[in-house]
Image (cartoon, rainbow, N blue to C red; front, side, top):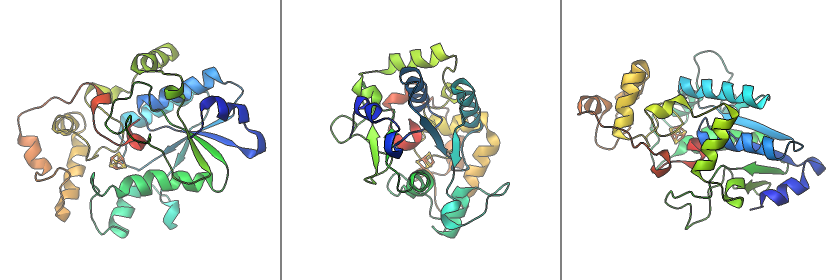
Length: 266
Ligand code: SF4
């Protein structure tokens, strides 16, 4: 781990790269804006690892973030890892699910999706370069494990060094909201009905969020249901058909209280 002051002092000298993985969530977006505002002379790259199964609101938010930053966000994906060409309608998740994992859906206990769709494309993008990987864990982060254990990293590769500017400067949720408001970017619109960024079928969703997906994007809900025909379910012990029939439940309104994946959901 390196502090943001140390990383900025090294700067872009000797080929050092400074990279923010934006997820489509509020914390990584605020981090991109914060770095640009605080360290305008630092050359920072912004990347997004696209699973092919993100919400339309996520792509819209990333396009707006690009406009506010005045800089492109490089979209990476995992098709390159197995030499599959990109083409319309082909998404990395489906290719890996069917051709590598034999229809075995990911879950919190077998989260192959994060490793192959998010981490590996990022590591490939960095290659052997020395890189600082900026991560939007906040100074007031309370999610289980963030305080008591080592903070999450995007990659364990020794040439990819994590940096936590919000922790270093004790910036909390209020500060992140201010950064987003003052920039004009605001929050992603999916926070109206869902507590996190990531794939539309993410298994970390709560029941109320699945129901919100059905209301907001019925076509995506139907697609998520189709994956269950392989014999796996997204939610332990229940099919999406059964969840849709349950009484409506609200999603937890505070995303910072939810369990989840720091790589996909920050
Ligand atoms: S958002 Fe969820 S389903 Fe998608 S890669 Fe991340 S953990 Fe897996």
